[in-house]
Image (cartoon, one colour):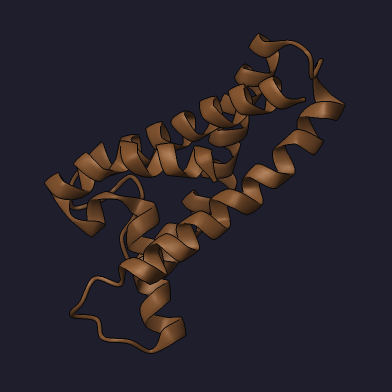
Length: 140
């Protein structure tokens, strides 16, 4: 949850600049909240956005220590942190890229705001991975 919190804090300035469509994860969660909870499209659904954001981040974070224990030396801060970055990037590639357009209707790389939202989203996953890797190395 801490890694997701830090990632969320990283994304806030971009949300303020571009709105929900500028932060992929939040935009997806807004659309999903409207669909699942049958609520108004006119209001930003912060509860749904952050519930889904933290649920996904927490589930991904719970899996990481098990993965890293089998792949790298779990007692090396550097390798675990680097593994966290790779893990964050893989989560972006595997979970966000394929679902973004089907959920939101906006392409990842051919976005109305250009490439900036994709770069911000990718950066958020790197931040998530750094924090996740550092915390895992600290507590393993």
